[in-house]
Image 1 (cartoon, helix red, strand yellow):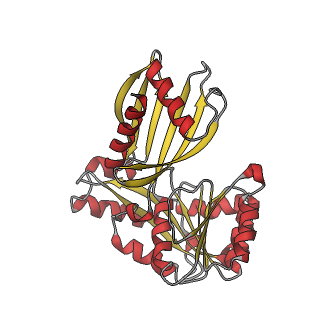
Image 2 (cartoon, rainbow, N blue to C red):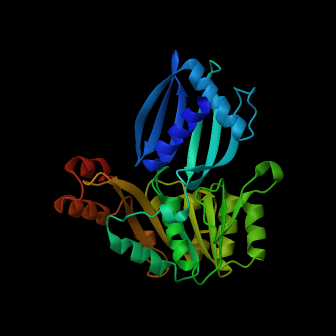
Image 3 (cartoon, one colour):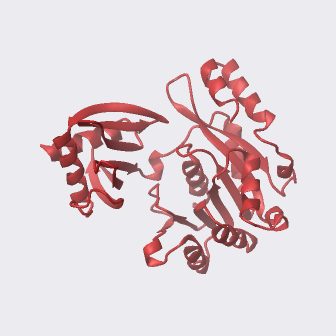
Amino acid sequence: MIEQLGIKLLSNAVEANSSDVHILPETDHYKVVEHRLGKVVPICQLSRQEGQQLIAHFKYRANMAITETRRPQLGALTLEIAEHEIHLRLSSVGNFLNQESLVIRLLRPLAQQQLAFLKPAQLRVLTDWCQHRGLVLFAGPTGSGKTTTIYQLAQQLSQELTVLSIEDPVEIVAPNFLQLQVNEAATMTYQALIKVALRHRPDVLIVGEIRDRETAQAAIDAALSGHLVLSTVHAQTAHGIVTRLSQLAIDPDVVKQAVIGVAYQRLIPTMDGQVAALLDLAAGPVDNQWQQVQETTAVWKEDLADAKRTNKISQQTYDQFKAG
């Protein structure tokens, strides 16, 4: 019964192209929601017993400790759903009332992860950047499609070049890439794995996220040594990406040498019920203009206004995203 419920929930999530399934405790029951196209979609309500049994079932399948319901746990599981092999990443934790929750991330093959672009010319700009050797950085909120964009670019390049990715954890399955995963407990940090990766002499290096000075410096060094490096940084604007590197104590002159371009990305709801990526782009030393970018550029608002004028997005969407 519980196993069938689990398969049904995952099958529906796969069919709806949802990114995550959340099993969350409430006062006297559990609720199941999905993250779909940037929105939280309610799915069903379960009794407390059903919710606990369902979480225990998934944890058992993912080799997680069933009796540990308070401390955070991570697990992984591969299932065949609707004739497709789906990789699942699980994260569980208990709240202050010792009520456990579970989030299941659905990792799909790269072929199923292609993004549409609100301004298709922006993808061509990114593709042009990737013809150079250096660092291309992306920023944007969680779930804004940054990793998907990076993988789309790398997929094009992989037809002729070797691609190696380092992530924490791997988010998209790409069999033609060499994919490494951070494991702090085994001292496989971003910095350590970048050193290992460079010995493999990849043409393209994906660094999932730059979080600290050591990782930033390692990515910069890889870019300066002749590799194309694609990575993400926490920042709220394109200009903020450069500011973030400064906060990490990276020499500004080195940044100018290494950075090809920076991109701030959001997923914009469109009138046809889908989403499309919109980017605020600023080139690096290629045209020496990126350092002049302040906050969200005027081009960002112009692109949104054009999308509203051509009925690709609504007035409400324009108002929501015009500030970035």
